[in-house]
Length: 283
Image (cartoon, rainbow, N blue to C red; front, side):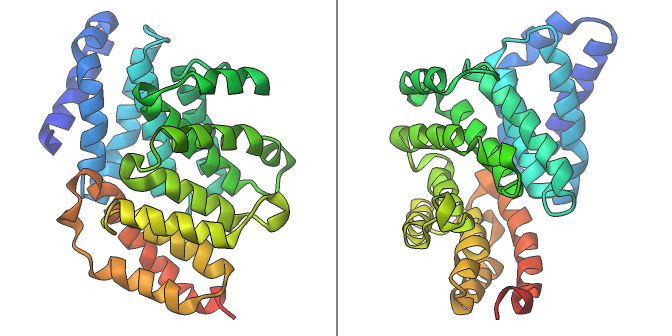
């Protein structure tokens, strides 16, 4: 889906919602929702994506009011808010990013049928029954949940949810650890590298996961290099690895992974900021 068709999609939805034809809008556009989210990640223009995504998310939230159990909408909202928080908000405003991650997680949990106040045994029982057909919403729940935890490791509430989030990740890893260009490996590596040993951190295992993540996409999905540098290289104070990972992303072309062009574009920019912090991160 091209930029113009994404804009047309939003305009048509807005017109239908304004005229009260919500059910018609949902019926007409529901099959297009997966394509819309894919088009978002294929967008290489960071400014266009940052400006357009909030409006598209609000439109989908409007549709959700008429179909609160629609799993496609719930999954798309989880994916969209997670991506928006991770790519555009996290570094500028961590508190706002935390709220967006929680919003994404709420939609994702609903998409996979887990109530927000579910007990750990109930969550475990539900997760054990999930298969590859449900990996998309489960993955984005895991992504949003761990994004929130990593921003709030100094808060008891976040630490209290480590176990549940890890159970989600374990299930994703069991179903398909190479999903979304090896992202489950990236999440695992980030968790182990970012957290102190007392909270389950393990630098050696983190390195193994990052190595597997890069192999899963042949180094074409830059999120692996970014978190490898940001979390692992900094933790073990390996400045050479840190700079090599940054250089690898700097020299790599954007068009080598069209399906993740937006993420790769954003990571290229983030790598510049990370490089500028090198003297502060290594001592």
